[in-house]
Image (cartoon, rainbow, N blue to C red; front, side):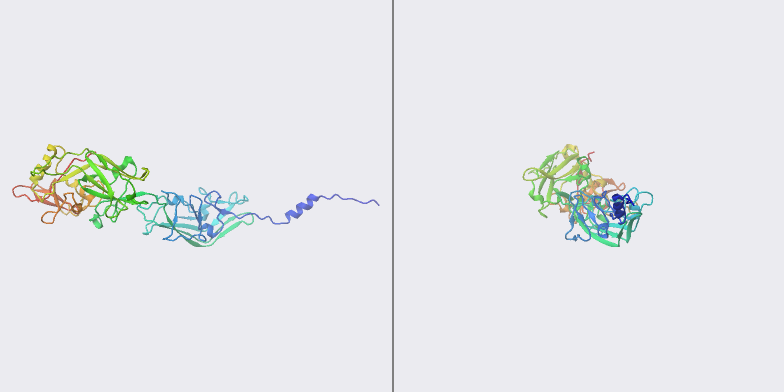
Length: 458
């Protein structure tokens, strides 16, 4: 009987052997950078990534308040620090994270596509504070001398959760609850942080807004843009008034600071005697003086407004830091003990042959806006920019050589052109901006100190 031969397919054998084994792929992952960083563990979930690609997780984090992680670029914010919490919130459910508009997940096997193809549970929260415990937003530009104080503490907290796709093996990544704390500091570059006049009477009720005045440092830099240098301190000036530039990131005394003279006013820069790292800026200009015979010398009026740009150069004469401000008003005092109101009116009008000077208004000396029960000025000034000579510069008798002083009574009130009534004129105290009214009629008029002012240049 002939032998019956049956066909045999080797491909069928191979197929059967293959499908008999389970296909293993990769687990789904969370990601905030389109799959470059794949988050599949709790350690990854609580990790951060800097703009230069450096990654830190709880397992690799060694940062402390004394040894913080430094951001790779200057003028960065926490929006430049990659993490799974989106920049527009401080807390998010992982279920929201995997949906639009974020879509912070992926699966290299293509699993999880389609409606309900992927689900997630758990929550993730971030908290950021400065070294004083002040909350810091994600978009705040970080520097060594802003309104927030480094180093910053970034705390990421997660609850238990998971990321699961409908199909695939493995089809899930699980996370346990945990917390990670990172200490971060901005990249330090040469920066002018503050312009510091006399700080006396700059705390408590005399302190200015926190965005403008620091009781320990002075005025914050309000603008580094030339078009808005007028927002910076000072806007007023007088002969031999001075302030210090508080500089971070470089020793200011190692730089060269050319003297600036314009409009009849000069700004001279020298290392501060209080801190050689900082630079003292001294203003000199029109001033009252007398000749050998005791007669007053001619006093010019400065040309205002004047924009001063103070630049510190390195040894190769490359610009390192700069600070700009706009002077709008100039004041002159005669250093006298005191005089009656009629005298200050006559004296101010005689300066520069009667051109350019007058008795100042109360608001040009102090921003004292408090009122008593009768509607009269009460209280003290508040340190602020563009709010009057005394409000800007503070305790005036402290400026050696400026002529501002206390009288024989130990007081420092100056006449203003504002009337309280038909008999009295308001006077402003050059120590803390308080006010009082004094008789102006002669010969019984009161005796107060004298100061004259130019008009405010616009």
